[in-house]
Length: 317
Ligand code: SF4
Ligand code: SF4
Image (cartoon, rainbow, N blue to C red; front, side, top):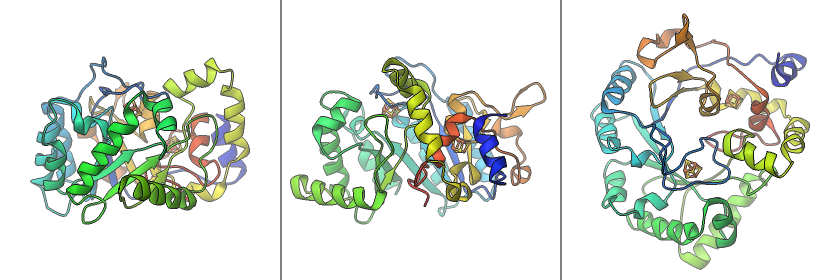
């Protein structure tokens, strides 16, 4: 039993799937950036990307369910060659189906991606964009030189298309080091004030996300001899009130190959759902048997339950 499941047992808090509301699809590890906190180890040299055949199988499965939302993540999801095909394919289903693109902003300005922002706006895709700070210094430290300026430029393009007013545009903050996020409401007010004042930029909500100690962020912590200290910080701040809102309760996560997981973090740790002796693929999953299924946990889960909690939709309490 890992320390997280022991903690759940101590608090008599079972962790099981509820009704599935989101299918989160990680379409691959290819990205134009190599951020220090990345839990995917994504970067420009990664080869893992979802093929058209897998997209077809994922969308066909999704079409037969009552799940309302597909949440595309990566890597930079827009970099897979079939990204636009994926969106058009989902939008051809019932129009009430909702699509989210987790965007690093800079990809919207890269050569070869002309018209991408306009495409997203035309299909009314919700954008959740990483923006770890409103200052150039902090953003560039975490994501690389020049990323702040490119992100501001991309946000201006999105605003000009109606994002942040008629179309949903949310920003994601994550700490630039081994500490927990500040209160979400306060940070959101700071972001709104600063981005409006200095750049004329508007957006809807800010989501604070805690860095989980896995992949590249774990390497960073190890390198600075801070892994144990950070793990202890997460454990010491365990908040039982976060459990009912954990994203693994209403989400199914799928990899670029179609394998199924409880969440994107478990996916990176290869904690697959099993089908006999091998991984379970989405197209072999009966959606009716997901509810009440036990969720696989590990010590990394303390990252979701520390303080105000953390999920793809921000703080939990
Ligand atoms: S955090 Fe996001 S933008 Fe940065 S390398 Fe990872 S996938 Fe790419
Ligand atoms: S990492 Fe977070 S979302 Fe994933 S299973 Fe653990 S608690 Fe749930």
